[in-house]
Amino acid sequence: MKTRGLTVAFVLPAVVTAATLAGVRANRSGGRDPIVLTEHELVLSSPGSTDNTATVLRLSWQPPPETAAWITREKLEALGFACDVDPAAPDAERHYRQALAREVYLALEFDGPAWEARQHEQEQREQELRERELRAPDPPEPTPASPPRGRPRRESASRLVVVDAARTPEELEARYPDPRRHLITAGTMRVRIQRSPGGTPALSAVVLEVTPAQIFVPSPLAPALRRGQATFSVRYGRRYEPWLVEVGSARP
Amino acid sequence: MPGRLPSKAEAQRRADQIRAFRAELAELGREGVESPPASWLDALTRHHDAILAAAAASFDIDRTVSEKRMSIGMQLASTLGAAALAAAVVSFFYRIWGTLPTAGQVAALTAAPIAALVAMVVAARRERTLYVASLCAIVACAAFGLQTMMLGATFNLRGSPHLLAAWGTFALAVALPYRFALPLAGSVLCLVSYGAALTIHALGAPWTRFMDRPETLLLPAAAAFAAATAAAADLRPWARGTSLVLVLLPILMLSTSGGASMLTWPDTSIEVAYQVVAILIGTATIVHGVRRGHDEMLVIGSVFLGLFLLVRFVDWWWDWMPKYVFFLILAAMALGWLWLLRVFRRRIAVAQA
Image (cartoon, rainbow over all chains, first blue to last red; front, side, top):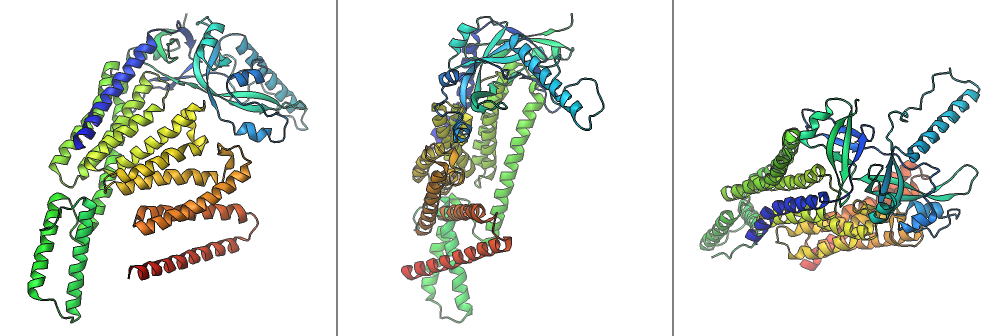
């Protein structure tokens, strides 16, 4: 019993490493061509300090615009959500709040119409907010137009926007064949009820996370980050696990 | 000749019994009670000395009260040392990470748990008390966890529930040879969580969200509790205790939040059902613990029932009842519980007499 237990313990780390490397090799043996992202989409998460010399990039992305037409009841049912309760029913809020999140595959569009639509929505919201403040009994001093705290400016916001979801990646591969414009990755979504002022409640969904959310920077590529503005060539493999192929300079 | 003692727990129990017997015999002598014949006392003393010598040779037992106190201190020091050393290993890896090529990173991560295992085996051979070996065992488990997490981070892998199975298997393989309690408890926790993660993953949800449906823990925890009987005598209380906590935790949660249940009943019905289950299971746990002499079941069952009742009372009365009345009722409940246990204890004493 003692020998058997110790043998398993000694062998397991090597088995785990071998299995991991086999999986990595399988992932990187295929997949889509690289997509080039900027520092707005891949944000330095761990800049490398004395105590933590690992360099990690966090994938920054934006949820779909509120006017996104692809989030329909049919789409949510296709993703595996149970949508049989009418959103206007009295127990609908409870039903959909308690529904489990689901693992899905997501298509993210880079620097396309979806990003323009999101920016337009945000600028409209900021404009409405400014007009509301000016109409108030004690309007504040006029200030240069600036976004509320926490909202990214147009030039610094991530241009990666979620534009579609499916249960299998093959559906998205067929719909979005251009790897330079769309990346496909795993993620998690949850259904919710959307209530617009004066309108009927409708089913919608929120993207909770994209997995993996971080990309490790291999040691040979880390020095390029310290030279200033960078672009990142990222490739997603057969298992939709990404890796950093190249770090370039964004300066002309 | 004394028979072979099956485990350290049995050896310690026998040593404590012999010490208490000798102390009582000395006390009786001081009170003027007639001593047994000298020849019988000599034979008994030789027999007890042989038992203590055999127990000391096979296990690291405490022969005196002072030794027992020292052992508790040594166990605490060993646990704190393990936690500090594990933190040192993790911090060291983060510090050197960026300076290593990928191959070096993979090699270092794979070597770390193996190195800790070698230290564990060497320490176990050199030191009978196994305190240093148990420290190395905990560090080995931490190093294995670090290996899997950092390999995943380095290669940007999507997580998998099989990670829990790997952690649980490693901890079990480390715990069983030398009967280390903490790795065993960790193993039970990981393997039960693995069962729950597989269930929620089968439902299409992310495997990390198994606590969104606490019932996913019930079946694997019950299976672990049943399997605890197969563990070595030293490890059985830890296996039982850990799996029992994992059975009771979802029941406590669902007795308050029926919406997290997998059942399709109304929330209130689910909560009432689980409140009934909580009372029945909590009481059964305490009774079983008392009858079988399983102290960990008695403690866990009592804490569970106490927590459950506190949560219920707050839920029912806190908002409208004057606070002093609320706390008076709690005190009355505690006194009532004390009276009930005294009655129970008297009945056990009568039955045993």
